[in-house]
Image 1: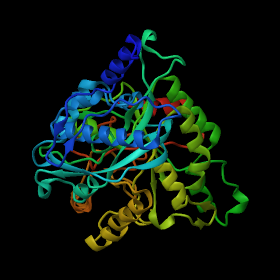
Image 2: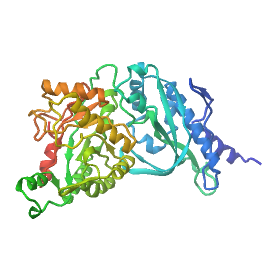
Image 3: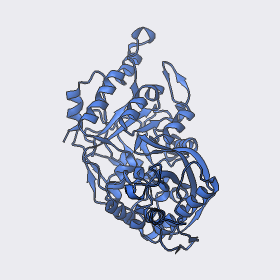
Image 4: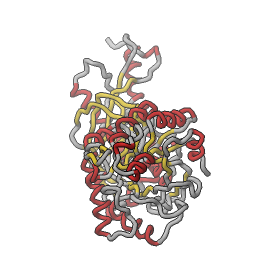
Length: 455
């Protein structure tokens, strides 16, 4: 016999999962996501079928621009990536319009994965998820940029997790917990999905400090170096573990939120609001010491970061320095961090190079990194110091470089500015001029704070 309490529970589950009538998308008919109480006794095929239905419903809503209907289908970890439900609606409407309007989708074969980690918080993860590949078709792919991004949207993935539902105590069964399926990875709708070049130059600006690290570890030993010059270079690139922990601790204490470059561009290109005290942490060259000493501290703080390895240095030992392997980079990419491009070896400046040299130093390196991580590479950290006092000052040579990088699929470039020459300033109209300042050895917290607050 069905009791009133059980009937109420079923109804509450259905409402919690956001069930409604089936909707028809241009590519397929999406059935309502079925309410499933997920406990250890659930048959795997039942949960898999429910995950597929949820994925189909979510994508059909994306095509219909019914973003608000998707909100209830997101797990709390996914909702936490957005400033608000309304902010998500506004950003997706701005991103997927005109030639970039989705007109159909195709779901691939579901597979079980060990877990999912938030792209903006390496400390937030969930285990035992279902991943469903999704391919998205745009209204006019020939007009969607940057080059290569259409292919990127052919191979994204929705990630579905078993989530505890928040129900009133009067609806809870004996045992006290009810589980349903929710999306943690939104595939093409995710906050970290590939940047699509806006049809019109955006007018948004930001003032986000972008800090650059290299070696994080013990100081080099002078006796181990053949020359003072090589020793001085490594020393000036080194921040000790104690100093790094102090700087990250300062950021946490002061209420900073570390964000990705994708998150910055979501603001500059589509108007997604930034956290009140956003900061971007970057690590150049791909040194193994970054993985050994910096990553554990970042994970404990819940801070994401962007790593810029040189493709020609992956997995090698060069003199006194060892570099991360492909497996290390892949693990970072899957664990809440971003991997972007820092050219082939950092020993050759990008300025005033031929197109063939640019293709070798940059374009081919992005392809290698994409093959390692399985993720699009859309940003490049220029090799060579920024040749001007101000990060916003450019000349004909830099403009030429920007025009050569854009066809290779990049959407923005990061400078290496030794000293503050202008206030922190990022602009959607000038994504190739993203300023960065180095963290220096033995830098006091007062000095570090003054750099963050500059301007």
